[in-house]
Image (cartoon, rainbow over all chains, first blue to last red; front, side, top):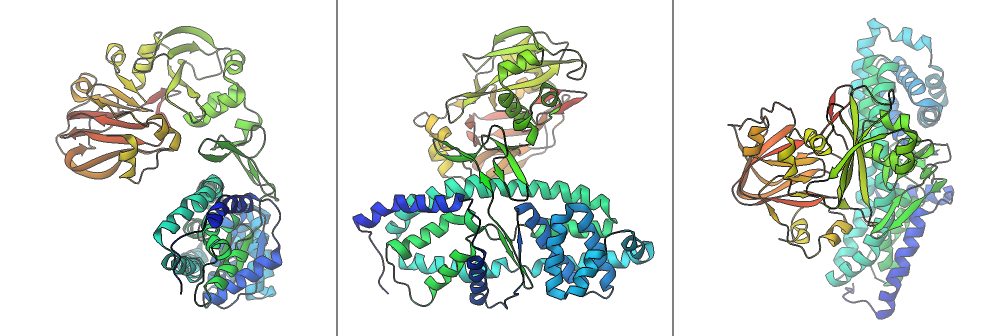
Length: 463
Length: 140
């Protein structure tokens, strides 16, 4: 095998366009060619020495995948337990009522084809009071512990890491050992990092953390309260512990771009079937997230729209009036210059909603979305006083009174300017609440950190 | 020390535009009240006058220690023997998350706010509060 220790000028010139090609792939909203994707996944299973489950379930959004895939795995495990059908039904009903019909039908179809349509439809039809009576207090604890113990095995049956190591990292290490470090790092920065900052970190990690928080809150409250606590907590812990065992699809384009550069541009010769493995992985990742299991594969199709803004050092999700990313089932996420916010922040910000928002960053984004000057006017704020901000020249601290009823009684607003500059050269402003007995802006700023006015006035530096 | 050199040695990702803004400037060593976003570093003498009791139990800290969580954490970076911390602190205002006792200058890094260098001495680390129906911590 010939080791690659230098790139030709022509190959170096290809790095920029290659990165752009993979950025475009990663951000594409074209629906996936499902036949290609499924065949790629099947070949990945072969390379990982896993039996092909045949049953591929397509869903439209990552949130459905995050709930449905681990829950389907849990249901499949639970159905094998001694109290079989009761558990299956109980879990089935938890899914149905808690996370909606999209999740439920995805679970139903995964379970249905894996264990036979009779059981599948039994699970599906189990939603309702009949299930609750089967899972009454007498049966309840048995069911609960069976479901609890199924969580571990359900998670173990997720085979993402097997697929990953058989395909992704196998090819990666083959390429690493065949490429000199100078070439490696040149392509790494020109292709991998460029694609990563445009796709992987701009989109995948943003959706990832939004799904993570949706999982925490939705599973915690909806599932927990919708069903008996044993089943609820089993579903909760299955989803919590396993939703992320997915592979990234188009949003993990960074390393695919890096690997394929060596195959397609640099003409690197690798022994064995490494390039075939990469081909399988590339096809498998031509859609969205996918969640491989021994008995089914769940694949998410691409989003319908993605809106990004380009900043000096990368891209981030942003849209001023609509979800920055939206999927074909209607699920979407709202971002304000890269900050994940509730929909009202971009779609219908108002002084009332701004007043009720507890998170300082979300509130700041909402005021920006509404417009600072417009907000001050429409919220009906009355100036009380202003003063130079200690340690933060040339900015001022501004103290305002809100009109009665907008904020809790006894509150004034202190408007401040950030000590650090944003990447676009602007500075963020914040409006935070202070006690209304205070009528001096520096005293108000000092109160925020529990200091006396004169101590705070000596503040030497703010960043 | 320059921010870029410091960031290079840690696992903390500082935004590129912040690194650019700090490009050639040495991080000044603070010996008085200094703010980093919504966290305030208060010299112990001043903190004591404002309700913070000096702690008597300490633990050594080396490497990277998160002082305050958030969208972006405030992370203390210290070499062996540079400083120790107490997280059991009595504060009449209930704002102090810890007191740091610095022997040799240490840094606190933040993705958006760059770095603060703390001079030798004891520092109370306070979070920021808001007035609502009840007093609450500022969340980000």
